[in-house]
Every structure is written in structure tokens, then in C-alpha cells.
Amino acid sequence: MKKYLTILFIVIGCVEAFATVQMSDRLIYNGDTLLFNPRFELPHNLVTEEEDTRSLNNILFGDRDACWNTACWRGYQLIWKIENSQLYLTEIYSCCYPTDSIKADLAGLFKEKAINGKVKADWVNGKNIAWNWNDLMFFLNEMRVVRQEFEFNFYKGRLLSIDTFDNVKSRRSAYSQNPEKLRKFIHSSINWDSLPEIQEPVRVFVQLSQVNEEGRITSARILRGSDNEIFNQEAVRVVKSIPEWDVIYSRGRLFPVAWHIPIVFSEENRERFRITEEFDNY
Image (cartoon, rainbow, N blue to C red):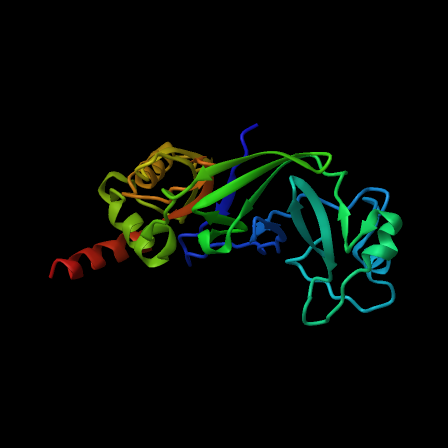
């Protein structure tokens, strides 16, 4: 199943719903400090999946009152380092470090495996994306959109390869960022003369998920529509006519982002549009 990011965009009120952006681990490589998506974990024999945040804090930080927040769902932050193609774990911090100055004692946790203040991460396998903070372009919901990404591939902590991906063609649209602009476009683009009289407001929810490199919407469908197909067809037509939408790249490829756009057809909106049109043309 194709994965995509889903964003709710409400035309009435025009609110974009954002989730909490998660804190990233740090990876020190060739003198640079990169941000790691929090995918690599501590070894399972140290922290099990059944542990909750409170017990995790007890294991890692003892009786010290380490904080937790929604941006740090694991309850800790990890610092990694690559030396001579080997990945090491060098620090385990609380979510609020350095404010609370709380970090784990690697020697106490890993015993003889902690050598010279670092632990060979021989439990780490697979691929993980890292990026440089200076390459950040913008946030989209909980997704960070960056100019360049690096994919590190490990086997038992050994670095096998690094792939680089270019996302520089990513860009935001004025219509997704400016609710008033989108609302005006939606209302002014509805062919009100083709619609029947509206007794009660008709709400149609349209999902757009596919956008090409030029930002043109290539896929839009009804999520929840009207019993009258005329309103459904008009809603899809209007959404697909938006001149330009967000273009998002991830790992060098177009990344599908699903937006849900509710459109309300009503006599009030019909009249408001006509008034706006007459005023604009005055």
C-alpha cells in the first residue's frame, strides 16, 4: 500500500491541522552533526517494548526526574557517531537535556560494552535517513522537507553504504499556505449558475493526493459527497482547477500528500460570491 501524508484543510475557517514534530537523534559523521530520524533504538535486552515512559526513565536515568514531552515520545534522545565505518552510541539524554542536565550512565547500562565513553552499536541493521539542519526547507505537518537527505545503510552497526537524495524541487503553494486566497479561489471558481437552488447547505469533502512536478493536481476524489451528483462533480472540478499546489519530494522522488478539502455549497455562499465579484469589478 502506498504511504502518504494526510493533511486536513478546512475551507470554512480554513485551518490546517498539524501534529507535533518529533525530536531527532544526532549523528556525528566526518565532523558534521546530522539529524537522524528516531528509528534506531536501544537494544531490546536493555529496553523492551513493554516499557512505558516512566519505567524507561527509571532504567535510563535512575531516580532523577527526567522530563517527557509529546515531541519526544520515546522518553530519551540518542547521540550516535560513526568512526572507521562503525556506528557507536555515545550519549543518552533526557528529553529536556541540557536544561535538566540529565543523561544516562553508559558504563552502568552497558557494562563492559562501554569502552572509552561509547558503545559499539552492533544491534543496528538497515537503512535510516539523516539530514543537515541547514538543509531544512519547511515543515509540512510532522514531516520535515529538506533539500538533501542521506540514507545510511548498516549491518550490525557497520556502515555499508551512503546514498544521497536531492529534494530541492520541493516547494509550497500560496493556496495551501494562505486560507483566504484558497477560499476566494474556491468560491470564485464555482459555477453557481449551473447549480440548482440550495435549500440546506451541501457539504462535499474532496481528497487531493497526486500532484505533478509543475504543481498541478492530477488526482482528486470525493471522500464524502452529496446525493446530488452535480455538487460532487463541481467540487472535484474546482479542486482540480487550483493553479498550483504543494510539490513535495522525499528521498529524491515525488511524495504524495493527501489533503482533505471540505467545500460548502449554500445560498449564502452563492450570494456572498456574487457580492464579492461585483465589488472586485467595480
